[in-house]
Length: 194
Image 1: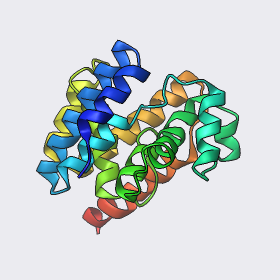
Image 2: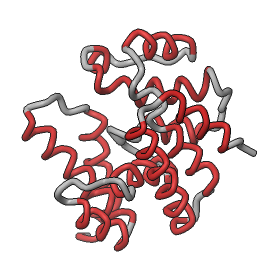
Image 3: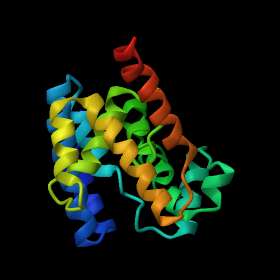
């Protein structure tokens, strides 16, 4: 249904070698996780390939494609360029590639921050971005173990890791990440206590 080879050629032109390699690793991980968790592997691969399509674009290019797609940034996102690429990536997929599947668009849209009530596809791409073969941050082996244990354990560890990392850097924490964490606790982990 989707021409993945075309998307691969597109990101090869748009991204640095490093970012292209990362995107291909995320696509591979997303496809594998989709098979494991019962989601559509093709959609997961598409979202993985395209998740960082706008990561290296200028602020102006990102704002232009967001507007063209009829999407918008929150006030917080407008003030911090680091939040642009997940919104502009979804906008690019919608406006330029004519992808209309909300599973793919939302998986790209929330791959960095997460959000409350994440769909299975959104969780898959979020986790794939954390555990892809190219990742080598300090806790990556623990992260991979958590994802191997269960999707829920992986999601909780990933959101905790993000929150602590952002706080330790003294950076802005996106409220969607806090919402994702609270949703995970309420949905998956409070039930185990009761």
